[in-house]
Every structure is written in structure tokens, then in C-alpha cells.
Image (cartoon, rainbow, N blue to C red; front, side, top):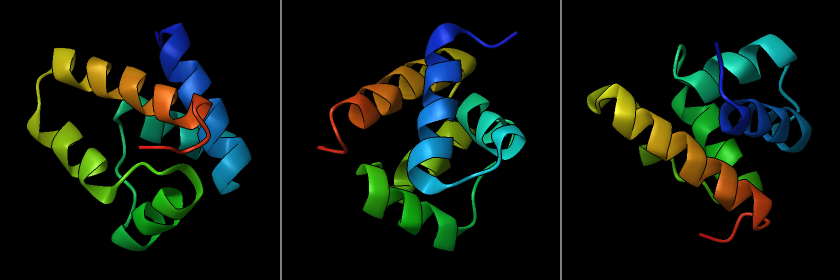
Length: 81
């Protein structure tokens, strides 16, 4: 089950990047990783760099949870990194 910060992150990805609900949820929870092209578009809209998505695959579940919370914080701050 997804936690509140993951759900908020998915919602922000949908709204700011124009992603479909299921895909945004998969990205936010770490189930899927965006293409480099999409990662760059997400960076342009949110300030979250492409390396965020790559690091998620390299880290543990705990680090992924922290990254999701940090990503959600960046989105809440209007994309300021």
C-alpha cells in the first residue's frame, strides 16, 4: 500500500507533468522509471533531476521512501531544488 507522501507525489506528477494516474503512481512508488526524455521534462516542470529516478533503482527501500518524500517536498516548493 502506498503512503500519503507517495500518493501526494503521484498527484503532483500527474498535475505538473500531465501524466496518467496509473503511470504517475508507478513512478512515485518506484515500480517504474521514466525514460530519460520524460525525466528531463519532469525536471523542467518540477526541478527534480533525472538522477533522482536512477538513484531510486540503486537504493534500498528506505532510501526510496526518503527520496519520494524529498521529491514531494521539491514539488510542494514549486520545483526549487
